[in-house]
Amino acid sequence: MKFNDYKYERPEMKEVKAKAQEILKTMEKAESREAFLESMDEFIKLRLYVESMFQLVSIRHSIDTRDEFYDKESDYVDMAMPELQDLVTSFYHVILDTPYKGDVEEKYGKHLLNLAELSIKAFKPEIIEDMQEENKLSSEYSKLVASASILFEGEERNLSGLVPFMENPDRAVRKAAYEAYSGFFRDHEKEFDRIYDELVKVRHQMARKLGYENYVQMSYDGLLRTEYGPEEVRTYREAILNHIVPLVVKLRERQANRLGLDELKYYDEAIEFTTGNATPKGSPEWIIDNGRTMYEELSKETKEFFDFMVEHELLDLVTKKGKQAGGYCTYIPDFKSPFIFSNFNGTSGDIDVLTHEAGHAFQVFSSRHYEVPEYSFPTYEACEIHSMSMEFFTWPWMENFFKEETDKYKFSHLQGTLLFLPYGVTVDEFQHFVYENPEATPEERKLKWREIEKKYLPLKNYEDNDFYNRGGFWFKQLHIFTAPFYYIDYTLAQVCALQYFIRSRNEGKKAWDDYVALCKEGGSKPFLELVELAGLKNPFLPETIPSILPDIEAYLDSVDDTKL
Image (cartoon, rainbow, N blue to C red; front, top):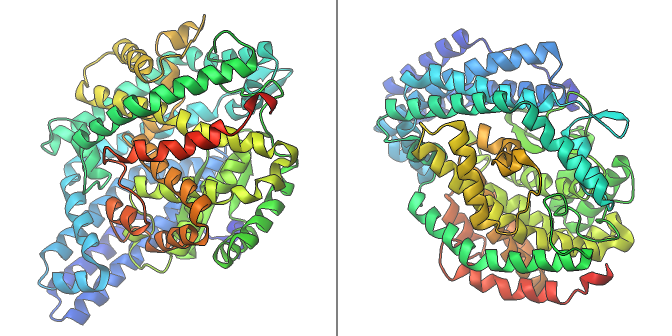
């Protein structure tokens, strides 16, 4: 069965709630281990069905935000999702309070109970209406970004369609493209400010209703961070500042030198070579064919996975009008199907999608044997290890995509992982400010963004772009609006993935086998336990970041980038 044949039917929440409550009562009255676990499995089956239908809506709406049917269904899901979470929370209460708790742990593991305890802390029925409003505002942001239709070089383009021009070797073209891109956000500044201001206030209101001082700890609990908190993240940000930022400054100066520029302006950062950035040498169909070859040769596990994705048409990759921006991987449990969404635009990012999002998809495909939805994906920081590491494990096949520009791509890719880290912690520190100061005005938020940006990205030069100089760059970052405090997870995972880069070069198959074992574990363990199982070092330890830099710098220094 292909993705377009996956049948959607709206789960009527009135009926779902009645059925769920009936099952929960049966669980509470169960007089044997067998009876309790049987009813528990019945609840899980109902939940997986509802979540599968919601995923179909989310995917199909993101593919075409103009589709009236799925636009309405998306609005319905925004309202229904908190109601489902209320039912799941009730389920958590039952499994934590039952005399068969030990049997639950024996069958599903201690981690499920830990996740249940944390989830209960971050949710009560009193915040359902607030969550519905939050979902509505998040959807409004996504629709506004997807609505971009910008006349550039004689054609109407969405934001993704501008990206190739932002990497053009002609400096004037790059600047014009960047101005067109930022101009969309500037022209809608009041709308973005309003949406975010309302999001901050509704999230703060939820936190106060649940007894938190502010939204920060509520979000950490909601993200199921069982092993670390804001203080550990603050110390980690300092490590990035002390060890990565100085290296990034050197890399940016090296970039300016090979471009023949006295200093980089903001519209120069995306172009790395006077000959242009590395680009894939074929059509989207050609990329998919090469991807299939790559995963067939990488391992028997990846061959099975990618064949499944292609045969069931679980990839929607090319940018088009009305399509939501960005890229993602998700999972449709009733069909045991990952799904990859992206916006191909002719840049190297198209290949990154085929490795990054496929890393997510490979993980959830590998762990689809778990019965409980909590174990399909791990928490976000662990999730991103799979995706970012797959980018490096597939390096031996990059010549298939980039041909004579392979060395250029590899240098750019590895350098890019380091360049990303300071930006990632900028996003995180900004969000801590926002939610610790929920009464700050939109202007104060933008000023704070620019202040933090200068701390971690000291060479950032916006020249005469008033909107960016006023601190508006973050409007483009979807996660700030729709997934608060998620972004630090990318950086934690990147530090782990860089370890796999080193190990894959030094250990070969042993590193790959550890990676496959990590993927098979899914979300059955917390982050730091998965890191240990994967043979990686804890990114929070002060010695971890300094320990990985010599190998990375050695590779970058071995490349004569002036000849690329």
